[in-house]
Amino acid sequence: MSAGLKSKRRPEPSASGAGAKETLNERFVYQDDEAIEKPFNWKQLARLASYMRPYAKQMIPLVIILMLIGTVTKLTVPYLTGMAIDKALGAETGSTNLTLLYQIAAAVLLLFVVQYITGIFRIKYTNIIGQRVIYDLRTDLFRHIQKLSFNFFDKRPAGSVLVRVTNDVNSLQDLFTNGVVNLMIDCVQLFGIVIILLAINFKLGLAVIVTVPIMFLISTALRVRIRRAWQEVRAKNSRINSHLNESIQGIRVTQAYTQEEENMKFFDAMNMDSKKSWDKASAMNQAFGPMIEITGGVGTLILFWLGASLIESNELTIGLLIAFSNYVGNFWEPINRLGMMYNQLLVAMASSERIFEFIDEKPNIADAEAAKKIPAIQGNIQLRDVVFEYEPGRQALKGINLDVKAGQSIALVGHTGSGKSTIINLLSRFYDITSGTITIDGYDIRKVTVDSLRSQIGIVLQDTFIFSGTIRDNIRFGRLDATDEEIEQVAKAVGAHDFIVSMPGGYETEVEERGNMLSMGQRQLLSFARALLADPRILILDEATASIDTETELKIQEALKLLLKGRTSFIVAHRLSTIRHADHIVVLDHGRIMEEGNHHELMTQQGIYYGLIEAQYKFL
Image (cartoon, rainbow, N blue to C red):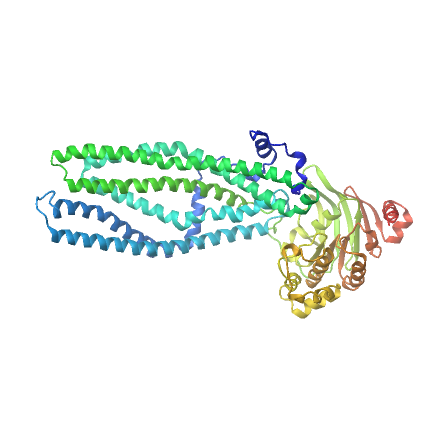
């Protein structure tokens, strides 16, 4: 649906924004973008982590060793600081030892240098590995999307699919590049600090660590709400992407009907709704930090209150208390990062749920277990009692029976919605029939591989798609190993050569996205050349000449007489003058075959076909 055609279902946003909220939450919610109400899925987390498995050999000898060296050097510095206070500055001995102080200072400096160097290489290798993981995940997702069936895309806007490959995958980058390694660093650091604190003074260490359960209870209370909030953000961002894609595609319609202001109001409402969701999720996210700081403050109070009494009883020295204080500071630092890491993990889980939702989607059209490659076909086609439903109870075809001999040209005519395009979609197996059989040269098309079937069928659509790139590349898309000479031959055959060579770059002319720099007729000629370059045994023309002027159509008709010779062809056309010479004309109405025959036979019957011809001539 074009952006400009939504105004009928858009209530005017009220001053409070309530109308906009109703529009977004009740009338513009796509099923696949609804928040997924599930408990934390550890299996899914393991599945996400499995993408790092191919690089485990790189992580173990490099990253983990560097991480351990950096952690040990960091944990050694507070102990040396305490030693400097007690031994070198005389807090314990009562006399200053400058030599020892200089030695400790040099050791601390050396530890910082080692920590800095190991940190540089650790970050370098984790970034390399993280980007490779993201590459693999995005490749798997895109490869799987390429295999999904038409009904999958029928139910989802393009922007909703686009956001999976871009935004959702991008949101995982920080998790893989820094998050996983930082998680290991923090866990190792925490374990080391706990051991050191208990070793310095068991009583004081236990008193400080007892505040950890408080932090755990706080994070547990917030985690479910945070996760749902980020899922809502992802869903609403997806809707914005969907609407943006739709608006760009339909910008001509929007401007033609002067609906820019209405479209802007609708986008503003969506944008504001997304902003509110982000603010809500961000506020919850930021609540973690202060909670940890407050808990850390409680631990610090316990430290100095109990530490002072231990110094008075000579159970602890001033230097060890300072070292203890530094360790406690280092203790809350990874605790705080782990809290933020958990938030990051919640965001990643929200994205991974949406990514794996697509990856787990099973194509409706897939090769049967015992499917075989169909050999080079002749083009004999039979449809027997074919019934097809786009949705249960909504029949598009109702018991179609049709026999087509190899080399015949079959024209499918009828009113809009009669089932013409449905038949050719079933022949190419873009959808599977509900019941009945379709055979080509005696092979049931559901029992052969999809690739071997479609590789021998060429299709030219009314709304042809031109990719960004050169004209030569667009034609070569029909057969990638075609030579330049073969490309020019098919271009000449369909009458495209003259306009191509008249362009500034000839065959190397760069066309804009969707071929906007070309006329509709020129785009159709390129699609003809692309299909004919593939040299298919079955050629399907779905309203292929609808957007071509009469002069261009005459050129194509002459070319088609030669090009369709020896091929089985199906021609769908509302412009009935283009199918007068078809070998067999099938007249459809509401999913049933009403008449069959050639042009002369059907005109003689003076039935539906005769009425369609008469109606068209009245408007000439």
